[in-house]
Amino acid sequence: MHPESYEKKDKIPSDDNVPIFLKGGVLDQILYRTTMGLCVAAIGLFIYNIRSMAVKK
Image 1 (cartoon, rainbow, N blue to C red):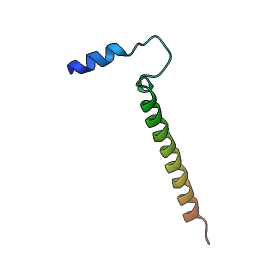
Image 2 (spheres, rainbow, N blue to C red; image 1 turned 180 degrees about the horizontal axis):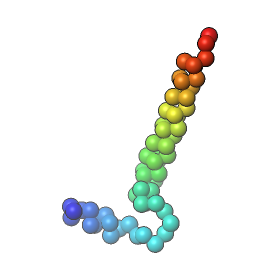
Image 3 (spheres, one colour; image 1 turned 30 degrees about the vertical axis):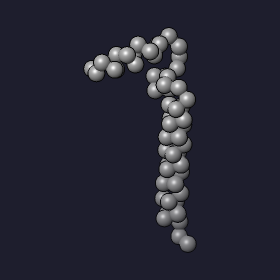
Image 4 (cartoon, rainbow, N blue to C red; image 1 turned 120 degrees about the vertical axis):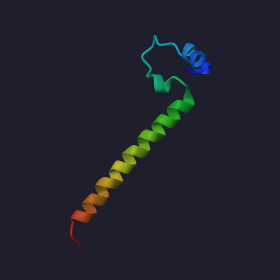
């Protein structure tokens, strides 16, 4: 492993119930929520497209 990885690993305590991908602070939370929001929007648009192609106009 890279030496900086060990330094970052030591900074993140593992005694609380916060997932590791959210322990980086506010920026990690913003990125996570943005990613989840975009995934939900993409799934919604996918379903909308499939439905619109299946229904005759």
